[in-house]
Image 1 (cartoon, rainbow, N blue to C red):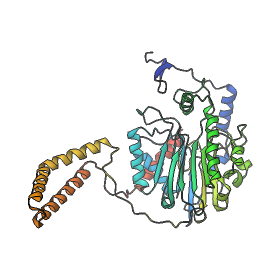
Image 2 (image 1 turned 180 degrees about the horizontal axis):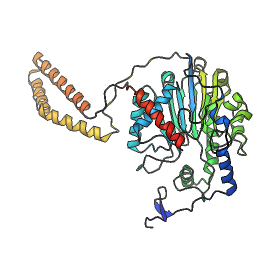
Image 3 (image 1 turned 30 degrees about the horizontal axis):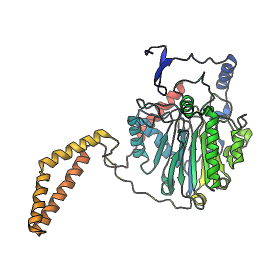
Amino acid sequence: MRKDRKTIWNPYKGVYQARQPARKTSKEKLYTQMKLCAEENTQDILWIGDEMTEKCEDGVFRIWLQNWNGFEKVNKDSIMFDLANIIDNNIHYYSIPESTVNPYHVETMAKIKEAQQRIIPDGEMLITNTPGFPNESGYQPGGIISGYQDLLTTRYDQRGQDQLGRWHYHQFYGKTKKLRIYSLYRVNVSSDESAGDTTAWAQQRDILLSKDDNTDPRKKVIDDFLVELQAQVEQERTLIVLADMNEGIQSPEKTNERMRQIGLINVMEKWVGEQSMPRTWQRGGKAIDHIWATANVFPQIVRAGYAPFNTIKTSDHRGIYMDLEYANLLDKDSTDLARPKQQRLKSTIPTRVQKYVEDVLEKWKYHNISARYKSLRQEFKNQGKTNLLIEELNKMDKQITEILKHAEKKCSKVPMAQNYQWSPKLKKAMANIRKWHNRMK
């Protein structure tokens, strides 16, 4: 079928197919959404639970969950601005569901990783999404980003992810049990008739169908995730789950109840009470973003709460935070880590590799390294090891080292100092831009 305005490319089926008609929202549903948005909801500008302190006390680490409506993928300064907010708010672990980042798009990943290395050099960021999406664009519906820094760095053990990119985790060494923090994004309610061809629901649906599994992706992710969690509970791991579940705690799907049955308790339901749980999506009427944890986490909670909308990041989702006692969970004093120098030469950046190789070859020929080595090798065979031969070999070795260092320095303009000083003036200017942009919406 020829590409035109009536067709759309389906990357999973490898064909152009007829565009689906736009979904029509019922008048009743549209009225309800307009009413919810138009209502003056005083809770939207208040902290529910405990207000987040400017800094954590010694021995306390902070966890933050918020759907950012997609991560800033193109503008590196915007990414650094967002990560600087993570630092400024003393957040040690962050989870960003529905990141809309394609982890197989090289340019986008390079920009995000470079921003992360400049602002949070001693941390780590994990970016995942449904596999198989075309890598021509940095945008991909769905996905999750999470990361850690500072106190948690010295206790890091391992990471892992679901094969369909629906969740991932970081694991840390604990005092008596290992602590595993999961991040999950669950797709919205949809169907074959209503879902767009490249939505997160459709991506997961196509992969499931390729395995002869006709289960709805929204149901399948919970079924599979509970199996995963049950196995970890049986291994007596400490678990924390950070999720954009797109479901209230009293939903007919009963995910909250199913989580409770395997030993994971809804943190905010217990901390503030079900009746006090606010909406976490501005176009909704209930909490759809949640934190669950095993029972041994609760005695370590110092503070927890829902942030007002647009705290830390402009978004139509609230942020949720939790401060935890470090010693009883992880049993390790924090250690200042030496910041490594920025690595210019990276095998994942072909242009740098090519420039490095070209520069080495040029200097190698200029200094006649190969011919000199052959001459010294022949001299060794004829005369054996002599002081003069050792001196010449050391001199050539030093010259080769200088050639390699020079080539690495020339292959990229990245400054060698990893400890990048984020500009307070630039951050303040970008904060003002975002504030006015938010008001104009």
